[in-house]
Amino acid sequence: MKVKISSLSKNDEFKSLINGKKINNKYLTIFFKKLSGKSNKYLNISFVAQKKIGNAVKRNKIKRRLRNMMNEAIKKIKINFDYSYLILAKKNVLVENYDNIKTTLFKDFIKIK
Image (tube, rainbow, N blue to C red):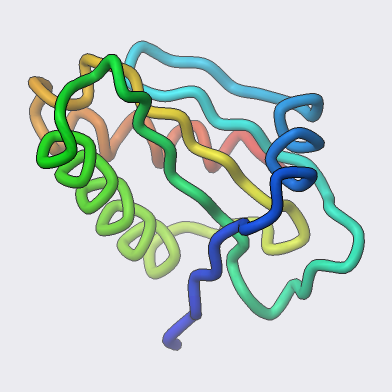
């Protein structure tokens, strides 16, 4: 089943998500909250890599890796589509092994019910 990933676009959505619940680990911070007016047919998720992590090439690499991990997560684990997610990357994501990040990301999304 192919699930479309839609990203957040409005500043108000980002602000309300930051005020919601969060899960922290050494690679990522995941903010999640139910947003009104969002469809639960799509996975509402955005990936953020701050400017202090590196130049645009490094930040885009991080976001590509995270997007790929989420596509795998949709296929392998049950993700709650009622929530909207904001994934904030930390500096460790750039140098750490892909599989380590993926396993911690999967564990965190399993915790979210």
